[in-house]
Every structure is written in structure tokens, then in C-alpha cells.
Length: 253
Image (cartoon, rainbow, N blue to C red):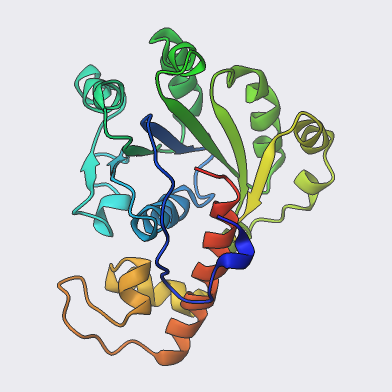
């Protein structure tokens, strides 16, 4: 969807293009605290707006993080266990409805996930057209994150590798912006999107409520009852969602 077709609202009626193949969206980074779950929540919001069938897997076991906000569409899954791998990847491989499967990957498991995608031939099958794999690589502000991208660039054959910068977590991304790694990524046709910062008080209020972004903006509690959230904080969230959805539109899922 073109960005200029979007109205500045929390939700919009959007006619999604027909989808034939299922899509596996993996949101990950080796480093923790870079905003992976926030991006996963935004993806779920985007899928809801575009009326795309979807399910999410929260690998932050045993308690979970994503599932606290989207318990109706999220399952806990310990990605190190074969049973959980079967639940996720068998579902993707067996889907005939064009559904989207989101994996919110816990910190420290990026390289293990890439090994798994290689060992199970998932990237090879994606390359041959069985399904689409999109890896949203969340950037932190440290040199570790830049090295992490550099070390994994050649491991995404068969998948779309999207870099996501998320300054809302307080990261200083100036080193990344000036890095040769970023320049090479761009020269090779890589896509980078930026999730803007949300007002801290609004973010804390949403976190305290345990609501989805849409529920907060629409002044609803998780049970559907009317809430009494601040109009100002809802305004900050509404504008942030508009900008974030415009960035996710650029991925062309």
C-alpha cells in the first residue's frame, strides 16, 4: 500500500492483495532490549488492519512477553524444543490459506535460529517458492549490533532480510548510520525501516494496561469495556501508530 493512501488514524479499512503462499515473519536480534516485542506487536496491528489471517509464537518462555498483550493470537513456544519447532514450521509448511506466522525470537537465539533455518532446509524451500520468509533484524545502538548484522548478512539466502531501527528504546544509532556495513546492505538492495519513538509516558501507560495498541488508541480495556485513558496520550499513540504503519507498509508483506 502506498504511504500517501493512508489516513492519519489508528486503523484504516485496507483491502489486502490476494495472498497465495504463507509467510513466516521472524522478529529477532542476538542482543536483548532492542525492541523486538514492540515490533512484533506493531506487525500484529498491521496484520489486523489488513485483515490477514495470522498467529504469533512468543519464544520468551516460560512467562512470555508478546502473549501478555495478544493472548488471543499468540502461543508460547520454546524454540529450542523439537515439539515447538514442529508446531511452528509444520504449520507454515502445511498452510494453504496464505496465513502469516510471526515468531518473536527471544534474545540470544539469533544464530541458533539461523542454524535451524539452514538445517531444516527452510531457507532452501523458501527460495524454491514453498513459502515466504521475512527476517526483521532489530538494530541496537552498540557496535555488537553492527557486527551482528555484518556476520549474518550472507546467511539469509532465501529470505528477505529487513533491518529495523527502533530509536524508541533509547539506542544511539549514529554508529550504525555511518557504518560501512549499512552502506553495503543498502548497495545490495537491502530494505531498512525506522520505527519512531513513542512518547515514554504513553508507552508506560499502554504497558501498564496490558492492552494492544489499537485497544489503547480506541480507549478500550482488554475485556472490551470502555477505559479512561488520557486523550493526550492516546493522541501520541495514534500518531505513532500512523507513522509506524507507514514504515511497515514499505516492507510490502
